[in-house]
Length: 390
Image (cartoon, rainbow, N blue to C red):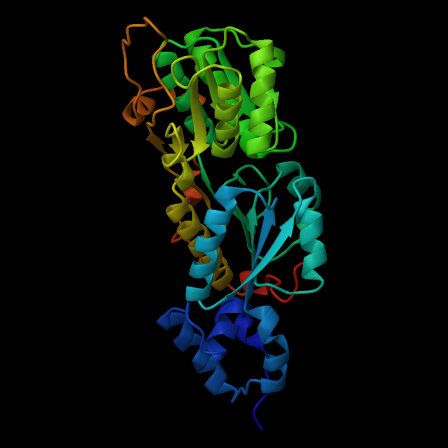
């Protein structure tokens, strides 16, 4: 009589993860021919038969990839979410979407959701690193931070795909300096709660440091939520604090649009009196008056690589990956030189490559590609994929 064997034992003997074995048995895509043949040899060896009743009960949960979205008014996240859902479906998984407020702890909320559903992987749109340091060890399935970096966090199941926020923000402020602006205000997020805001602020500070121009945080930086209303109120505050202001860097496009409205309501003009640079590259900014000058994040590539990294990690148990997607600069109509200033240099993306490398975020090159997977072994196949938390 043939020995009875479980999916977990097939995973151990084959050296592949439980997720890969499950996808093979259920004839799902995303499994290499080598892996499929190795697993099926073991299946034939033990005359293994899939429990179709158990499969029916678990299929809805075990084919899901959860996307946790922090905040429901983020236009960049909405664009990314639409792309990610389509890509996840194409990979043969079911996207499970959950929204939380910007004030909630995304790791704690994820643990709650995982008690209801048992996804195979999780993608975080919006995150705070402190929340991960505190509680992420309870989550054992593959996860990816999207738009925030996981580099430096000590978890072997947490990857990230992001823009180099620091270098991009530095570029934005350097561009304003190249037009003769020195009285520059910054509209950003909470430096204690937002990793993106913290990185962008750091990059802006590098630009001031390089030019040896002092920056008064209390006077020149205003925190707000990344919303049009928040940008409007922040710009009004900057106008009151800095009557001589000639330029503003807004850490999101929607904040920049609110700032432009506040500038107009104050009786000033954009860009003749005050230049404005945004961040994100939302499509709407190319249809506003004036068209917004902005740092453009590559949402197509961010979505594509995030989904590829997570799916490959689910299927092959790769080590964590920390990827940076290049940004671009979209020169619109919201920036101009200070009146009477003779422009001596034009900052371009190529200029950034010549800047001091010490002011840029470094890339963890030894694990920046998903094809650098370790050899298959039974120990790694033991990673828990049946549940989200220990």
